[in-house]
Amino acid sequence: MSVLSQLNVIRVSELSKRVNTFEGSLTILSDISFSVKSGESVAIVGASGSGKSTLLSLLAGLDVTSEGEIYLDGVALSTLNEEERARIRAEKVGFVFQSFIFVQSLTALENVMLPAELAGKPDAKEQALALLEKVGLSHRLSHYPSQLSGGEQQRVAIARAFVGSPKILFADEPSANLDSNNGHLIEKLLFDLNKQNGTTLVLVTHDEQLANQCQSILHIEGGKLVKVSNGDVTNVG
Image (cartoon, rainbow, N blue to C red; front, side, top):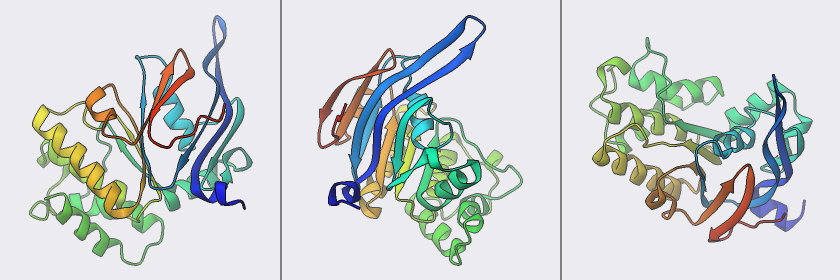
């Protein structure tokens, strides 16, 4: 493995994504290439319908490309079946979505522990307790999701995303459904934990102010990568 491939925790080569509709084939993403260094924070921005969330899903192995390749920590996702992609996600990836996805019958602590337990981590409870303390929720461990406010639920989601010390964190509009105060708190937590853990952070956002906090910004228009601004993301297309 080359030094370049070791540094680039994400590498995308000539990626395209098409879906079949009643009116024929629809191209969502076309000929996208870039690489992201380990530990970097990256924003993906663009208008609604530009393909941002589709790109995030492809990067995380939740969907498959029509053409091209995505290398996640040196592994070509196209060579993996669904079960193998799920294992890569469990070992290397954390997620924060704009909608809170919890097991409603589990407490905050149990929801945070769950990914680590599924990945076979022996210290799942210790990690979960430490992360919930970091996000200011050590007093809400035994509360169920329905007993938590929106801001508290998103803080639980962030703690859950970082449990197991993922190499890459994907976030899709992480503060979109929150008021301004809670939104800023969530954003600060994401960046603080990103720096503390050396995690690569890739987030989709409409918020220009949030995007500008990232080291690099990928601008998507009409399914194409039209510009890379700020830091070290390399447009290799």
